[in-house]
Amino acid sequence: MDVLSDAVRLMRTGRPHSSYVQLPGRFGRAFAASEAVGFHAVVRGTCWLFPESGEPLVLGPGDLAFFPHGAAHGIADGPTTTRRTSPPLTSLQPEPVNGPGTTLICGAYAVDRRRVHPALSALPDVIHLPAESGGRWLRSVLELLRTELQTERPGVDAVLPALLDLVLLGVLRRHLDTETSGWAAALHDPPVARALQAIHDHPEVGWTVATLAAEAGLSRSAFSRRFTSRTGQPPLAYLTWWRMARASELLRTTTAPVGAVGRQVGYTSEFAFAHAFKRAHGESPGRFRTLG
Image (cartoon, rainbow, N blue to C red):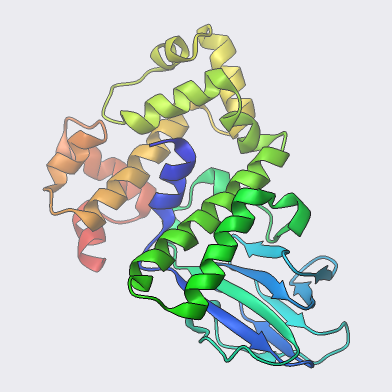
């Protein structure tokens, strides 16, 4: 798996939710902060978006607003319309689509905030993708999503989660492609990307700065400086973070014994693994698994 795919898989939990929502000519809704990642995509009409912080945005057909941290926000037909509390994006229900007004595709992904990758933690509260910048690929996915939500053909329960995953990855790709610093730079820097991939593919290996530098094709000191400046973490700190994140996923999704999970992420001693896990998560591996 590549690093971005790993990051998305790691934080996701449960099934994503989506709905096709018809809003009347006059509308105003307020969405409270949520643990979920969500988005609004305008299909027809216009919509004012009011982020919790920052200036309002006007969204038109094909525009998409993405909320990586579940930030509170509002939508309305105009700048002065009262915004009334709305159900969260994870429970919005489809509404009849007929007559004038604004039509949105809304989507939400339940996430485990304890496993959010640093590349995603660093994203802004709102990512706005105007229609012209979303790219043909993302527009095609949104059109497929619209069709599935409208027609509810056989197989829709399998198709919708896959399309929602494509929307999520499409938005993240487009955003990272336009950034030139931080994690976007790390993922587009071949030596750093090679080291990141090695860590993700083989967390069980006893990596050192020297062996990771060899993977990157750089001297030890040059690699350490470059990795740290790109990711904001020294190489071995990131290695430990990934091992603990991967361990938490294995504890939640498999029945492997704690010692076996520890070995899969690079700890030959169950005691050493349990100590490192408790330091990272505040509880033992066994308790973490029991609490779910």
